[in-house]
Amino acid sequence: MTANTSSEGKVKVAPHVLSTVVAMTARSVPGVARLSDSLLSRLGRVIRRDPNPGGVRLRQTESGVFVDVNIVIQPDSNMVEVAGRVQRDVSEAVRRVAGASICEVNVHIQDVN
Image (cartoon, rainbow, N blue to C red; front, side, top):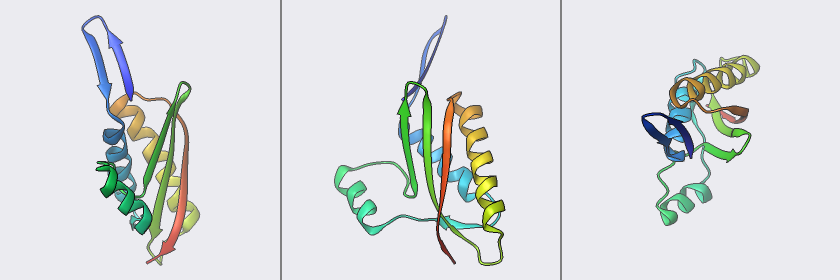
């Protein structure tokens, strides 16, 4: 959970909120067809009643947030350019929206569709 303390009190951002920001941002990048999620991962989220969107995994440490995004690329897209844009846009969105420190944004291209 990301937290910020000021003289007015604390602001806490739940991990599933950050996951939603990451998912929405990644989907908005031109060339991304959709996020990818395995059947096993979907089943695990249902069993745990996990609100996190599929295709995104976050790990928060004292040094910051590590993000893994699994995407499916559109066939006419340059994979390296799309992945780089996902990295930049996700990093900026998480910093801007939640004020979180980003350590890594790893993009995993799972398929072309």
